[in-house]
Length: 97
Image (tube, rainbow, N blue to C red):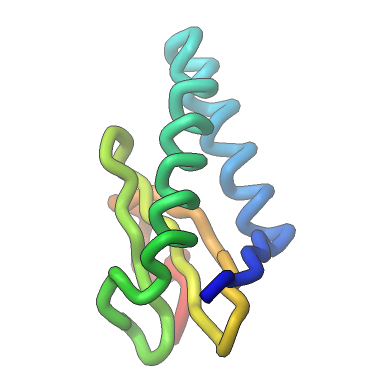
């Protein structure tokens, strides 16, 4: 089954902020982060139910190289990406209830 893949504006902003932060700390790391994020997106598209549901209907996919997670959900034939967040982020800033 082919899924439509939708990255919400808030997740796009999260990714941009993370990439800029990493690039500022170490040149080249922002691009490396975006490459890793693209790989994670590809895995989610290939195996949308490959990650266990957490906090209700949301799934969390971890990036392999960076300590970030992708928060998404699958609704019928659409994958919605809602947030990209650092794994050490304050609980009050995390997505979901």
